[in-house]
Image (cartoon, rainbow, N blue to C red; front, top):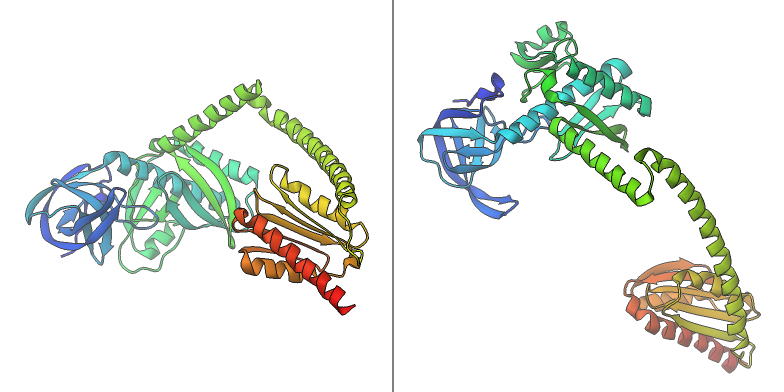
Amino acid sequence: MATHRLYYDDAYMQNFDARVVACAPTAPATTASGVRAAWEVVLDQSAFYPSSGGQPFDRGMINDAQILDVRDEGDDIVHVVDREVPTGHAKGCIDWARRFDHMQQHTGQHLLSAMFQERYGLPTVSFHLGSEINTIDLRGSEPSYDVLEGAQHAANTVIFADRPVTVRYGTAQQLAELGVRKEVEREGILRAIEIEGADLQPCGGTHVRSTGQIGLILVRRCTKIRQDWRLEFVCGRRAERAATADYLLLRALGDRLSVSPGEIPSVLDKAAVAQEANFKSWRAALQQLAEARARLLVAGNDADSEGIRIIAELFRDESEEMLPPLATGIAKSEKSVALLAHEGSGQLVFAQHPGAGRDLQTVLKRVLAENSGKGGGTRDFVRAKLSNPAQAGAALALAKRIVLQGTDSANAAS
């Protein structure tokens, strides 16, 4: 016998009586508090909504058993609970705060989707009701800010008009004749939700009785998802929380910057310009410092009998940004090889004057074979980052030995 779905005609039902048709142990359920033993309960009638159509299941109690999950299995609604429920009479109690929140979000989605399709030709191809944020995927061209704001405004205008939200039943053909937003091909009698003068959509979910009970719709961000546009939004109490959090954040930022919330964008623009100028100055100073230090290192290191000068340095306190310009500066000197490592970050930078005659790609490959990391470059310049920065000293010592072996081989050949 199919479970009679009480929520179809009365989404506001918070308590109900039912008969337990079956109760059997099932696989343990994973919950926020851990893995718990579970039983599957089938009732002759139920007001609990099962996960379906993007809307999560209802929570609550059957007698003293807590609902862990509710799902459809054919015509039956299966309630997964945390303890056995005896067959016979039972009382169900809905977690009303969760149910009403879902009603606000789902009805808000119907209205918002209708506005995007009717006004801007952007149909909704999927919907997800999340614990904090809801999303709809829109198909078509990228919605501009004006489109997003326009759909939000149109939806809220309908909300403020407090229009009735009613349930209609009919065949697919009958609903199509009434102007259903999205036609379906299912046979038999279908259930549809009508928002007076705004939308008619087949749906088995729970909804408010009038648009005023949605409260408010706030459109959040919109991002590209494959061929569609994913729009985030919140309704009702969630919109209130989001708007309050937005204001508190702006006020806190304004207090930190000693300006009003409306002045924050211009202050940030000025700060970004100043930061860019400071960064350019810092880069120029770093370049000058690197060149000066390169000259000192070259002057302080003697070349070997073949004129090859190897400069190996392990940095600890300096910025890792110093390594590339310093290595390049050293490599400007005839037959010089720079082997630089940074102990804090695990960064390696090797550079050479072409006259040094080494293959730094080969040197780096051998170093990374013994010290895990990633990197690459050319014959004369390579850089890498070690997985374990503590290996920077060992990697530097190995690189120096490999380069010295090249010098020894050249001496032996001569």
